[in-house]
Length: 257
Image 1 (cartoon, rainbow, N blue to C red):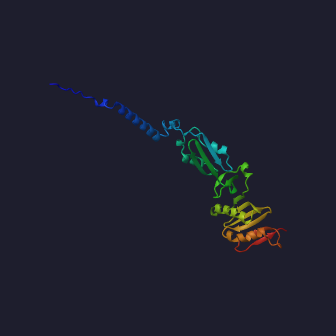
Image 2: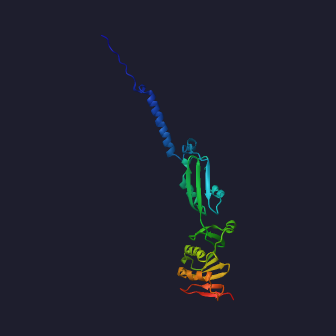
């Protein structure tokens, strides 16, 4: 009688190719996970060499008074870095610490471009603080120290707070100066604003020179009277030298002698 001899085969030899492929697959997944989880570490620093999205061009758009070169000097080195590694929120936070920058927009344009657009603050006045002139924004906040290059391109008034500093809302005063441009049809420009005992203040106009006394509490209701006196003064009084509008529905006009 013939007997059969069965030899057992170790399980490790049944599918050697499949197990090898599986090991490589697991290793590859682990590598990718490591890159994602350690983006700022050893593996993360090499993502730019693995990614096809290397930045070839950084396009900067900036508003006056900032130049493109100024904005560029505030940025980290981005060319050659992967677009996948760029974190817009970090760049935006860094740029907004600069004095003139109001808003920043960053756009990734695959495969190899990065767009950075900067909007700047609008100076509304100059104010002397401890002997130094500063640009003031529409909210009444300091932008930075006045620079001659920028001053040459501006037509903003000097703002002086004589008394009751805490009571004055600087933002409201600066809004008033902008409204005045509409009222005067650009015939006059404000050279100086002096905030005195609240709620009274003065504005000084150029071309021709004119002093106007106002009350911030009734400024809007008196604006129509002011507009008429500026644009069409009564012929019998001639060119006003001083207009007092601090009292409701009343104007006291002083003329040149």
